[in-house]
Length: 247
Image (cartoon, rainbow, N blue to C red; front, top):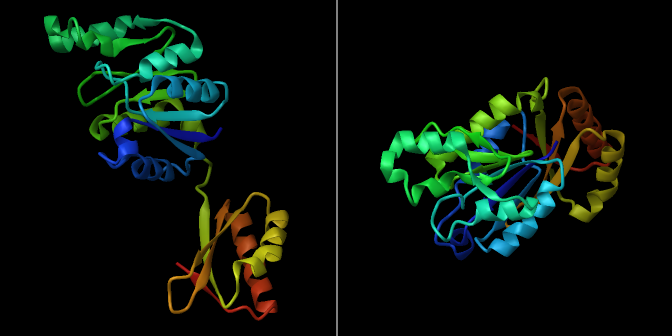
């Protein structure tokens, strides 16, 4: 199961607000031996959101969505999710109880909209102020406020998806290669990729330095990644390619 991150809000596209969620999600996933498989940023346009959610809901990915579930007219994520599944928005009875307990009569007529979710949705508990998010299939919709969304994300990962944690966290080796163009390294990269299919090999050129280099990353299960690094470095030595391991 891949993990997708969906960031929603016109303010992200306009630059009025800088996203804080993605670095935190990477941190939370990394602490559990996981990493995101994809990231998308969408504005608040409902039609675009519907198309995006139709696509992602048709798949099997776990999707963590941040933003757009409030009660104001510019928050359209709840409506888009309902349209994407062709179901109505309904007031979640347990959500109504939470809002009535917190706000009393002041829950009506506006705040109560925050628990109008697509029919069939489940609640995501919010320890910050008890106003829940909602989930559908493997999609989890949370508010854009970090103090609410980040504890909710941890709950999702630890309560709903503890089985995603690998038995041992992946390891990563970094190797800097000097005096070679990236194109010259392609045959070796292809060979390592074919010999160690469970190891992800990446290259990151650094050209704005006095001594340009390429930083290669090998990431995956411990035994396979250690073996891939040994084979990679042995091939560099055989070709008299200067290199240095990075911590």
